[in-house]
Amino acid sequence: MGLKDKAENKVDELKGQGKESAGKATGDRDLEAEGKADQTEGKVKQAGEHVKDAAKDVKDGLTK
Image (cartoon, rainbow, N blue to C red; front, side, top):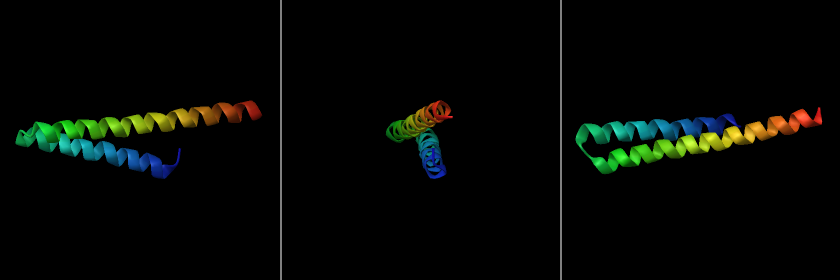
């Protein structure tokens, strides 16, 4: 997984946390939900990258 991808996914998660916190603080349920969705999106992308890494590791292990 590229470092850039990791960073972008983490940024999505952090932005989501910020939105969720702001939504809770202001009573804006839509913003809170949007923040949770952003966090989930970042985590799903991160999981996909981990799957790619694992597949690459398996492939590399088979070719050694």
